[in-house]
Image (cartoon, rainbow, N blue to C red; front, side, top):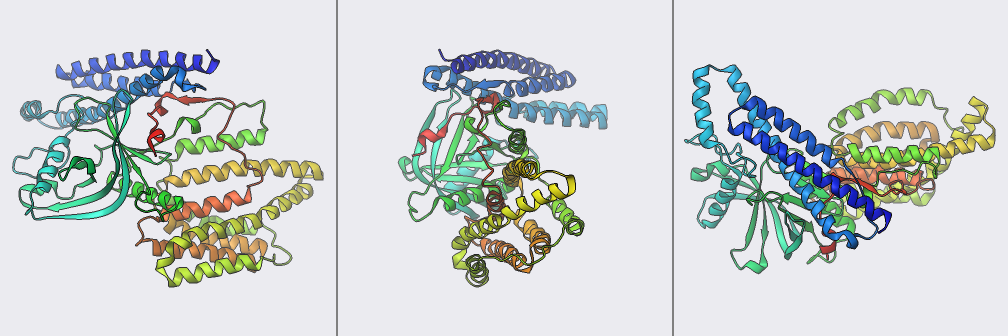
Length: 553
């Protein structure tokens, strides 16, 4: 058996052992809670969570031929998904226990005894994936609805033809739907169906459902009554997005933990839609989910992009630094950027200092007329025609690539001269140093592009800070003509942002990300390698997930 397969089997054995130990600890925590020992239960739950997190961190060697270890691979995926499901429930139980413990500390003993008796009758089944929600608290009974009660109430409401309910459809697309079993098996539920994200407004006996968001999919194979519903509840519903376009939702109504549903947006029925438009549509859906679920959408990386090991003896120091930048950006992207306004403020404060340290060009750099024309056309069209939004979205990338490719040789040439003059480097040493710096810059661009995935308010902030500050720097260094070109490019981004408010497949985040990424890629294109690819093929156990790409078509 090949070495890679042996490494995987060794990791698989470690996952099984860690899984058994973690679930034993979970059982202990549950027993403490059932015995009404909240302090001991909290400690036990916290230890169980740490054990689960340690299991997710186990390095797994990727086998070259997965068919030879298919059964073990499927079992490993199933174990990891069971742990992920358990992790969600453990965090919920910890939240409940800590809240109860705090209320006990802050209230009289007599009152706490009464509330404890009530909680015993209302407590949801432990680890049964049916948590209580905030919906229904204002009702006469005062009892919050569980997730399953919400789902059942929605189905009952939609089945009443004369119900006075307002359903606002926020999003619609064609999707393929999959069922993911706890065992790791994946089956197709619907080859193609219409999916909508809907907000419900209703009164009367259904008042507890007012304000709830839910996803519904038509099920052509199930007859007229075939509608799949999935309530979206902040802090309760978890959503995962894979990097190949699937959105995965845990099955909250199934008694067996670890089951899930997968949705993948498709172009079926809309053959005129391009891959870029489909990608923008996915991004828009992701933005909506993040807004509805208060940011609890987890990005899942596929094994091929999670290769962690780096062969340090076969790459240059600059490339190692570049790879580390990319790796770090992948890790922090989903959690890093919450204060984009601070970035804009920093740029505003730092621009005068940067300009003061730069020597302006002796003469304006000449920009090719074709580039100027493309930017001018983009400006005019974005100001005049909202119907051309899709065309402009593509032209943003074209204009930014032109700016980046024009600036690249100037950056390296001027940097090399600076090293020779200021630090006494000879020509060869200076050029080599700048080449290393550009290689690092390639990683920085890739990292910045990755981190931009996490921005929530990118276009407004970037459209302002970039146009106000980057243009000043470019104009100071390379002259008025280049500054005008950059200004026009960023103005195009601003105009497209305004137009995009009425187009559901273009988002502020997508436009800004595309602009920044393509400009940077052009600057460092000659130095950029496949920074995620390495000689080692390891991923963390927490990245294992059934691969829906096999069912994509």
